[in-house]
Structure formats: C-alpha cells, structure tokens
Image (cartoon, rainbow, N blue to C red; front, top):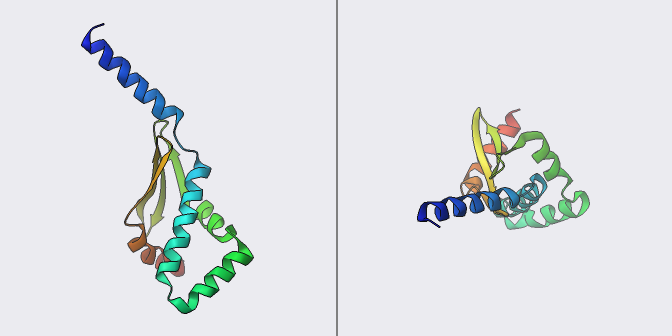
Length: 122
C-alpha cells in the first residue's frame, strides 16, 4: 500500500473512532453537575458549606439538572459535542466532549460569578 492510502485509512479510522466514542448529552450533564458542586463549594465560605451539603442531601441534583436543562443546550457535531450557555447575550462554551472524554471550560469557575449575577437579574 502506498503511504497516501495508509494515511487516508488512518484518518478514516480516527474519524470513525471519534464518531463512535462521542459522549452522550447525559454524560456531559453529569460532569457539569459535578463541576457545579465543586464551584459552589469553592465560592461559598466555610459557614455555608454545611448549608450546601444539607441542600444537596434534600434536593439532590434536581436543582442543578433543572438549571442545565433550562439554561444550557448541547450541540452534537457527530465527531464531538459542545454544551453552550448564553450569558448576557454572549454564547459561552462550557463543555466539550470527544473520544468519550469531557473537558469543562477552565474559565467556568471565574465565569460562575457572572452566570449567577445574570440569573439574579432575570
């Protein structure tokens, strides 16, 4: 086989692998719920940590799931997926999934304050 053909077959194999291993919307939302809990605990002082733990024990992930279903949406591009959110008229990519891995936007923690402020203003 020629070098060009091998490279083309390798490219097709990688593309097919990406399509087959694209994470589902549910898996991305589970990761975002986990990250939301981490961010919330970091932003609240130690006195409120017990309140957060108590709230999560009572309501579970219902509030986070409702928030994600209301304010975010996932676009599936077959090779990869992106979860986006509109904050003050700007579209923010908050998570990207490819090859069964999910990368949450590293700026999400600093944007968390802006997101909370935007939600309070609504």
